[in-house]
Each structure stands twice: as C-alpha cells, then as structure tokens.
Image 1 (cartoon, rainbow, N blue to C red):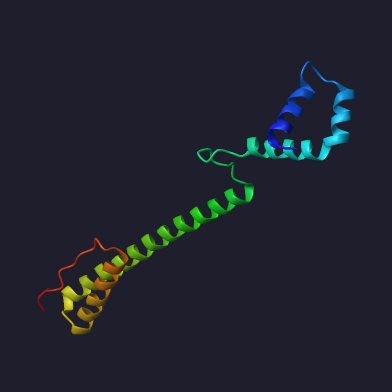
Image 2: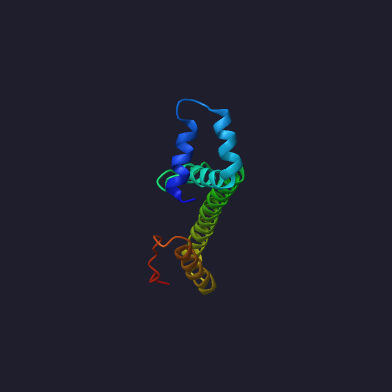
Length: 130
C-alpha cells in the first residue's frame, strides 16, 4: 500500500466518529502498514524544532554547575596568587630600597616577571638605579 492509500485509509477510519467494526477490519487486512505509517508520522511530529532548545537533564545541569564552580575557583586562585606575589614583591622592594643588595634586586626582577605572567596588565619599570 502506498503512502496516499495509507493516509486515505487512516482518514476514512476516523471519519464520522469511531467505527469499531471498520477499524477492526482494516487492522486485520492492513494493520501493520497502517501502524507503521502512523508511527512514522507520530515521530515526525514529535521532533523538536532546531530553534527550540531541549530541556537539560539533571546530570547536565549538575555538570554545568560544577564546570562553572571550577572556573570561578580558578579565577579566585589566580587572584589570590597574584595578590600574594604582589605583597611579596612590595615587601622585597621596600627591603631593597633600604639596602640595595644585588640578590634582592634579582629576586625583584623574578617577581616582576611572575606578576606580569599572572596579570598581563601588570607593568614594572625594571630600570631602577642601584
């Protein structure tokens, strides 16, 4: 039976209300074809349009929240590390200003590079006089 025939038979089945005898007769003679066609049509109409997003599962929501938490934790850790390194840099700079020791200057330069690595907006003029 072709598609047009299946559709015609399906429509005919439900015209004028339910007709149990006619439905039983059609299902006996062409039941599998009608059922298959009905199943295919139901699947076509149950597909979600591409512009409508599917509702995320609880597992997906949990994963997204966890990834967001890890991202926020990484941002927080970077901020804390930068602040601690900056504190160490300022303490060392203060000590170097008092003593002008060469080893302190080397450590200052290393901390300045580390601060710039942590935050590219950090700038320090490394041409200070001894």
